[in-house]
Length: 237
Image 1 (cartoon, one colour):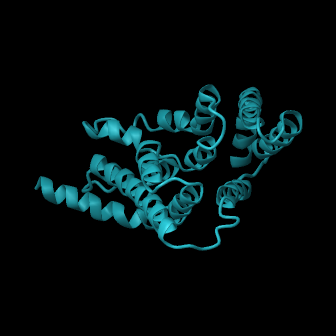
Image 2 (cartoon, helix red, strand yellow):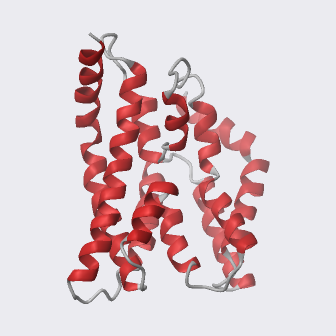
């Protein structure tokens, strides 16, 4: 009976992760190749994908490993880039309730895509909620780790022109930004992000603008939170 419940949860979760599989394998493969181009063996993207499991942060980490040793700056950058998970985590507290031993792994393995599926999916009564969220999280992590590892391995076996490959991270953020822009009815948050980025780029330069930008965005959006929420409420009415 328990085995059947687990299998049913897996079969219900797998189809919902197929779009993530396609995206993660492409981005993960690109990340693995990028690491190889920068002189790292496939072991690096494999272990980093297993432990960090943060796509945008891993792409940034690739350049950090080649730059001057700056542990404090690296720590702050990592916190800023992944800080959104703090808010994701708060909203998932009720969802993760009563999941037992799976809860620590669900917390560790949560990414944007797993959060989206686990938060929005209407789970039928005959599907175990804990096992469903566990398999969504596990499958998405497997997709990313295997894609990164294969990229690292194949990147070392096949010689091809990788010029412009590092642009994949920039392209990923542009696509995410455009998707968010199209979904928003008001663009206050997006305009704040663009303005703060350009201003900090001018003031601090390309090498040092990231952390000041994230700090500025966080402070400005915190101050504007109530007006933004009020505007969203008016738009929904």
